[in-house]
Length: 242
Ligand SMILES: O=C(O)COP(=O)(O)O
Ligand SMILES: [Mg+2]
Image (cartoon, rainbow, N blue to C red):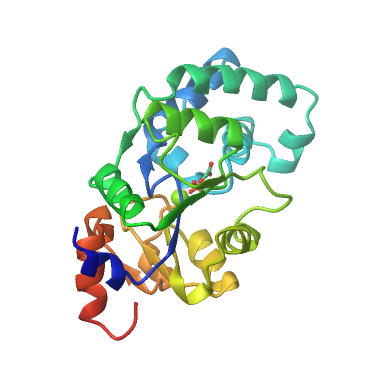
């Protein structure tokens, strides 16, 4: 990378969603859900269904799966006396499944490394609970890849509340116009809009079964190749708006 590329970079801070953006986590989350359901003598749920529940946190996903199988409301599951125990069992299963069937999406590792080398601050903003986030990042050797990791239970509120974005902007002293949010869902677009920062989306992630284009992000990028510093500079040179 040349000094010119570094100077021409349009962003000083990039925030990344985790599930469906950096890492394909659906297969092993489905495995852990089904391990848990099996212990409870319930039939498994299919992976496509499980991925439609991703986005509000892994705990919420487990609640949805149990509600689905019990024919009960999410609230009834949340209040049920055995939920805490079931959640503990799920945690054990997810711990065992972590890193077995998840994978980084194309160009994630090299683009993150090149952005970091160019001096861009990088953060994860996910609704996944911190304990799971740490395990998944570690399983893929990404535990030191970010300057800040904000999970669903790091702050008092989660996405689409913009607090995590503001937290990172404040911490790294970066203005909204120099900040980019990269995600895969309507929740990510709503978060970025609430924070007043540009948002680009990948089309391959989890968005409750809907095309993320419906949420009208500022740009849809095919994959993380578009976030490599050289590509980023070329892309922004050719367009008026990010
Ligand atoms: O639902 C989750 O656990 C998290 O999803 P996210 O990383 O896309 O915010
Ligand atoms: Mg996501």
